[in-house]
Figure 1 (cartoon, one colour):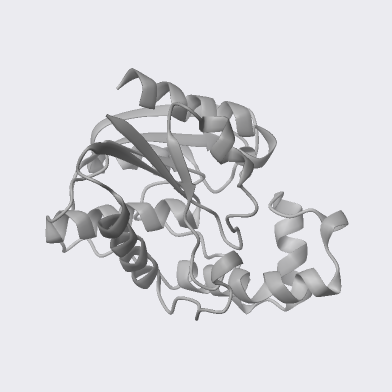
Figure 2 (tube, rainbow, N blue to C red):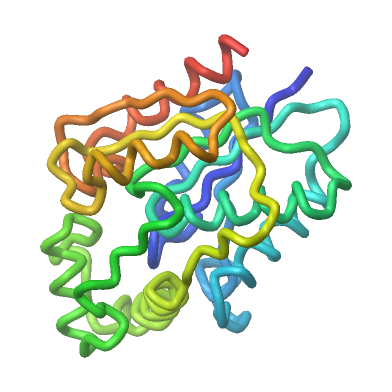
Length: 234
């Protein structure tokens, strides 16, 4: 049976950022980088007005692309992690496609916790760019006015839908198999928030990285190898 892995990027990320991952995961998984509306090759589409809208978009994509004879996995970093969990809630609600075999959460504590203390969505363009450079999600050397004109709108949209999101615990929330990956020096993933994922998991394991929030950029091969190992062992 073939295996599919779909990755949802962090705020401002696009399929171009992670395109080399696809070849790295072969032949163990057919990997796809999910392009969020308003990003990359979908740059002319409207950005999402809410995180739920992003999850609904991914859900529709899964219905169209996941075949009955393949098992599939979802992974996502930071806002991408929230999107894939909310997508699992939709899959559970509609019950017309199978749940993923496992989801890979990275760079985020339990779904109940949203880190909006800095109000990044209200920052000026320069302040927002400086924020992501400081966090390690962007490099100054690759930025120019033309590139910033393309990057800032989807990044600002991603930050806004994330900071405006609040988890609705009154719904029927599924328990899923998950692997939670985190940087031990990431202030956005304190131990209590990581541990709180357990209430939403059938099976859960944790993988730590001696790194900060954007360890998926600095330790890409290890990140993918941890996923590969769990896909192959299944």
